[in-house]
Length: 430
Image (cartoon, rainbow, N blue to C red; front, side, top):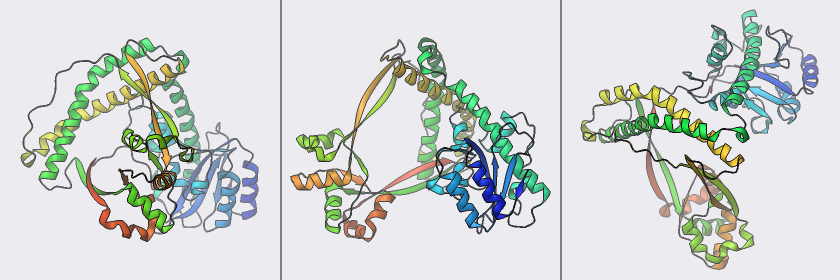
């Protein structure tokens, strides 16, 4: 466990590992609540190490030049695969969007269906204990004082083993993913189809009931003016929409170049007419594939006569939701996994039909807003459709957005989220 504190030693180590093909990397952050600062960078280049003796601990607290050196030689290097858990957190301190060839074990674990890996969450501690046969991993030092020097021996032991555990988890996840998604060219579509039909017959009634319960919860909370309950939270958001031509004229008047994709619906295509073939549009044709079941199973409706939203019993409704949720989640993950395997296999094996499924394709046409706006105005075509003003567009418009305020439609939408989110990103070190 080389613990490096001297700048020259750290630079020499960075130069050495810049030749590696893959590195397992972790960080420890000082004062993450008040003034987050990079404290340690843990790097492992030897995945066979089970002791942590091959983990390099780079002490970079308040040494931004060393962090920059690590970023420039390691993080932006496309030839080195960098493995993190919850990579989005670590790369905030290690290059952000400049980081290249980053693998996230959190995202890898989420590719594995819940019925294959039924875990309460995808935190590194849970994955270590479940996948690596380790009974208990002590993570108490995770919340330790990483701004204090010298670091304790317990902190150093903890830091070195995190990289070891990360490498083990990464290896096991790769193995499981290979088993989850066999070669599509050799998939047995008949066996997959039969399995899907069997699972679907169990999943459909539960899926319908889950949807009904959630809809009743949402309607009841709105009617009773509740934003919070034992099971769900209700939040609202405002969607801003403006007519395309209004936005097109504004950007031309203000000299603003807006570049974002616009989907050409059938209605917009009809309005464009022959102009859709104009080469200046540079229309992007994106193929989309859809898998449909050939055997539509009949089932009895599970929907019952629901009480009025104003008198909805959230306790009884929540109890039922809690009862059926675990089984539904497992079946739902299996249904989605089977459909994904079947779709990939049918594409690779060049089959559009099986006894159980039909594969169909459709085209999604997209053009750049600025190109479409320029063509529509030069040709005198009044395109009639609404554009959603995303945060990106609002930012690009700046103060100019105030000039179209009277023409903006404000649409309120409500979103209901479960109070107990089991599989969140590890946005902070905990």
